[in-house]
Image (cartoon, rainbow, N blue to C red):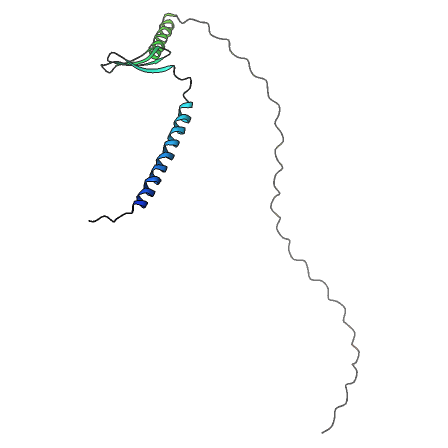
Length: 156
């Protein structure tokens, strides 16, 4: 397979374009790093170090967490909490139970009467009544007037 020939001017353009992209990426990485690290200001009190074969996570030079070489974890915060819980449980076990029972409560006050309920819906319509009687026959009418005579016809 034969590669196509490229002019020196085209190679220079490609090289300058690549350098421009690399420069923009470097600027982005620099400013992104500054923005990212601003959130950690004042948090240098936490430190991860090693003591012998142990890995120690410290806060203000006090051990907060230690992972020993054998894989066991030692945490001063958790150890202190467990000691306090054990002390409280011991005190609760040593204290005898024997208080007096409380007095019975009094009956509560009767509440106010409730509000009136909403108005009910109208009932269904009644059944239709029977048909009435037929009325009496009316008076006989008078004879009508005679109409006008029509025009005379033409003979044949």
